[in-house]
Image (tube, rainbow, N blue to C red; front, top):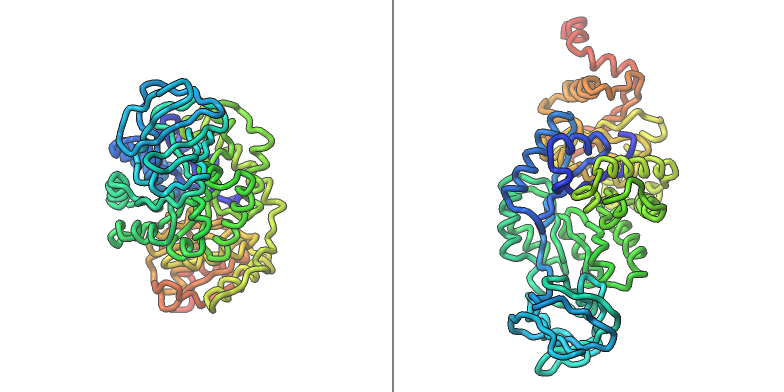
Length: 486
């Protein structure tokens, strides 16, 4: 509970065992990412089972994010790798072919999404091999040709980006539909939707959940997603700043400012935001992070991100637990200088906002040991998180699913489910749960929030201060009732 910014760790061959997952949780991981660009359903089912075992063994609630692979545009197969030089020309055919070298400076390839070729205009750029090779379009009639502007080696199935072209393809493939169905069946907490372009893509994904209450995270990695960000936020439960493809889709020097803009918009909208890609990449092989990587993580924390993500570092790295421990230490140290006055700058959009803002200000003013937030839908805890209190938000809910969905929320620690409907019993159970986990400060004070009627989302309307005497009273509630014949 020392750090407030959460860590999302990708699981893979280096980290999918129960033993390592337990170590990752103890080191500070709050969520785990299942990358559906790799692996079978059987593999991910086993990993998910291992997460559940590890979570039970450690006694901590963690979230599970299923990253849907999406329509990655790729070059087709090549007879052999191409060594492309400045001035070479590459022709893109709509027919599926085996790519070949036509002459000393002429190459011919195909795409897995040939319809995109009709949308490209002369002067626009095509990036090959995930951004490492740049080509400018010089011909679009009959067939599309582009001139190479730097050197690089191109091999089969490498990624292709069109940073100037609205490619307008279906974001959710048939594979993705099957993967989402798996996620619904296995009750994952979050679905990250790749290559989102607009609101429609998120609404389509929502329909595929068939009423399941999983949270949808929009991965912002295309230039048109940045342009349509406000409508995407309206239809999403969270954002991911996916800086890998984003750094190809927009000028590289715009990525830091776009990151800050996305985090600010997510904070203002009270939805969690994840900052991802190459945060501690050198630690895939190295024991220590570079100074630049450490600063990158720290700056994301200071920007106000809810979550920082690890990819290769934890999935295939030499020492995943060390990576998570390193990231946790960076977060903890950085939060000493975090702008907790952020709450003063945010506007309240409704009465519900006013209540949550008041709770956080009261907790900070009193130097409270924590906020005990009993939430039905999780909305009140996320709203409190938005106002960035200095004290921990200790969340309790009527359903375990609500608690696991709070693993993305900055400063929120999911504790336990509460079934009681009577206020005094609810408070007692919250305090007992903290006591059982050695988290209870008997001197307090604690700020409690409860909604009436109980169980109705968005009904938080009661704020109570628990000082030392009241904490003891609720912990010994049965004895108190006997004493007064209640």
